[in-house]
View (tube, rainbow, N blue to C red):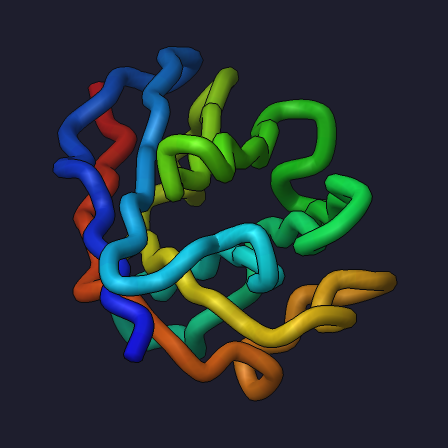
Length: 126
């Protein structure tokens, strides 16, 4: 059983930055594809980014491309999401998730991810 715990989000001004982290316990992350998702009020959960288990291949949704960066430190069993140039429309609950190998190629699909964190709120507002 993979247990994932996200770091606390927070309130950020537009244009600001925030880094989320996700720590896995009771498992070695080396063999898992990791992803970040978000869900805004009244909207479906959407994929933000993912990173493959082997070669570090990454994928980003168009809405966050060139602003967000996903990375992983397998030695620390941790995956990160660095969010820069934040916009009001980035406001959402952000979730970390884990999937088996091969789940991050040309999309980040929530149905491919089996294990989920509890979510953390990110609010972007002046």
